[in-house]
Image (cartoon, rainbow, N blue to C red; front, side):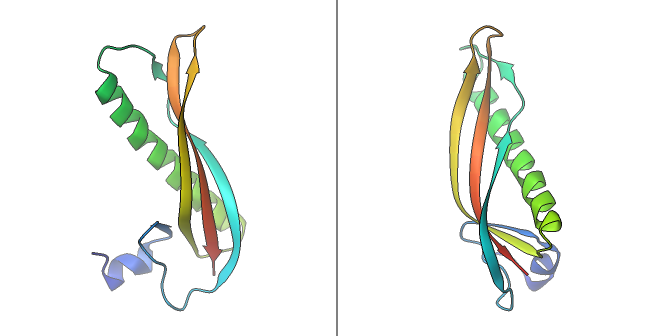
Length: 106
């Protein structure tokens, strides 16, 4: 559960977490982010998937924070996300790509 102190510092609100009641919606936007590239192998696939997922969330959080600052907002509420796996067969690499729709608030 998010406390009032946590909410005071929080800029990004994911899905069910809601921004403060006094936040004023400005406009809806989309950002994209990528995880780091990993070897596309069957060995340790679950661990690689989890590492990529965590890296993608961190990258998306950074991008959202940058966009909130750039657009002059105070909060972003992530409404939707689309995540897919990308592959480069030549380099034998895979990574996750996310597209996040969010509402910007002031």
